[in-house]
Image 1 (cartoon, rainbow, N blue to C red):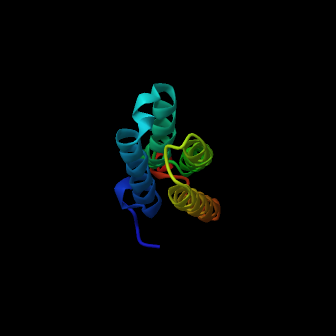
Image 2: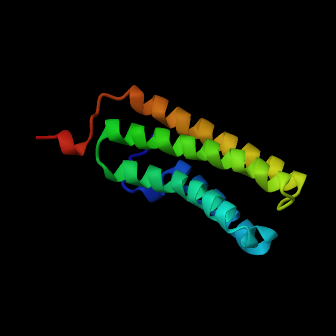
Length: 130
């Protein structure tokens, strides 16, 4: 694995950003724009995925990073659940729903795999170096 210097270099952050942008587009181009509470909830959970990846990375500690990745994975699951609500409320069609669910499932797997990778590393983080 190449050394990552910035959270923007992480594939999981890039994918979380792409998916968050898709949710934002849906919130602007469908009748979801008039469902304020739901719109803010799904935008918040989708943004939380990328934000928690970034925040954990910036903590400079492996243990904290893994914790924030766990929160990001949870937010991915929350957003995936809300995608079903998008479909159930006729904001998106079945094809969009299936694609978004699949993409969020893949992202959750990638986050899980990255947590597993970090669990195998002895490196605690730069803030623990004396």
